[in-house]
Length: 158
Image 1 (tube, helix red, strand yellow):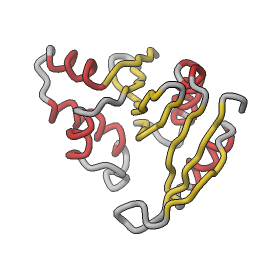
Image 2 (cartoon, helix red, strand yellow):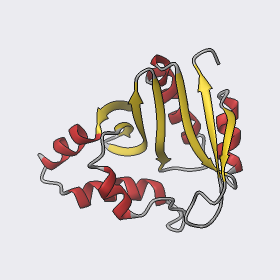
Image 3 (spheres, helix red, strand yellow):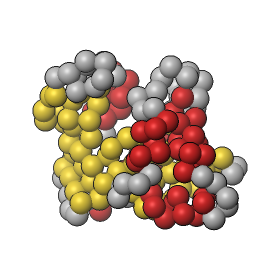
Image 4 (cartoon, helix red, strand yellow):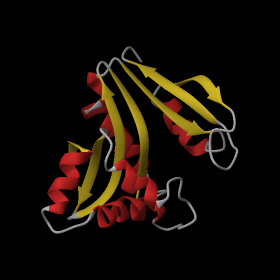
């Protein structure tokens, strides 16, 4: 297993040099998120295509030449905002392992890490709370489904 941390633009340029289009690159992320359950998609394919143009960074894990997890984040020194993440193999501890690796290798440099989590996503909420994230605010009707989102935060001292 290897992990990498790059700007999305750098990541996209490297794959474009391998003759991949932005659409193909977006499909890689989309397939990680929907692996095993095509209905479990918080982002649509066009969201990924648009996001490749952002100033976000991507932390990703590769196993045996296959991308298996990613975390999109904004580094606004001294803070990090996690904007989206997913793992390919769900229910086997891979999500916790990827998140833990990100926190220890990347987020350890930040004073504060924030993220949003759907109010219905109890598995993710338990994971975040296990890593000392605290619920600091709530956004009602945040998602296109009409459901709300918790804003969670972890300070450097956590």
